[in-house]
Length: 217
Image 1 (cartoon, rainbow, N blue to C red):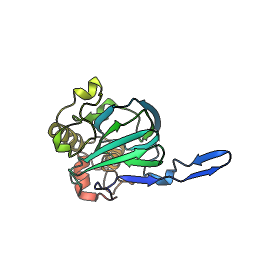
Image 2: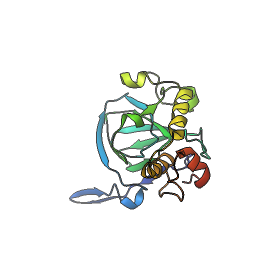
Image 3: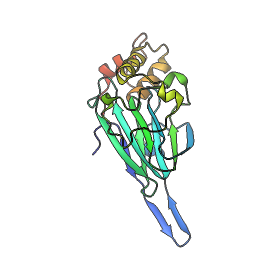
Image 4: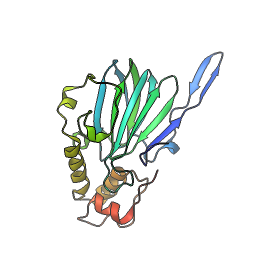
């Protein structure tokens, strides 16, 4: 049982015969918004990527080979599970897909050489790249490592408290266009459909959350 609302961990079924095997890894019906970009990542043992967070796009992750621990924390203002954490072990030998909604921070620690594939629902944008230090105690994550290999960028990330303020600020910035309001509301809050009145000018995604939404799994 996951602690964070909106996270989805799906077990995949592998079909085997004397020719080999086949595993279905994606259906449009499994996600709210259709991905626009897919990425293939190779990671060395002992690498930790994160902790990152996005207010615009969701992630859809599959470990193809190796073993990874996925650390997650809900930083969505107004979420029933705000501040809660999950640490999920994913293995290539046990195929699963994890859907991470916007506003849920995530980091990936790789126990072994690991191949992962993930999709996003918006093209990469520096404005949608937030994060915090992987070992900030406020994350509530018991990482299975003490000195992982991290990137220079991740080494410069701020504290969890600063990260939460940045995420809140992004969610409370005015959304200028009607289309932008609907898009940002859907993406930032993990909801699958636009809401009535979302095109009213001068309002923010967080205000529209309070008026029209309730976060759900």
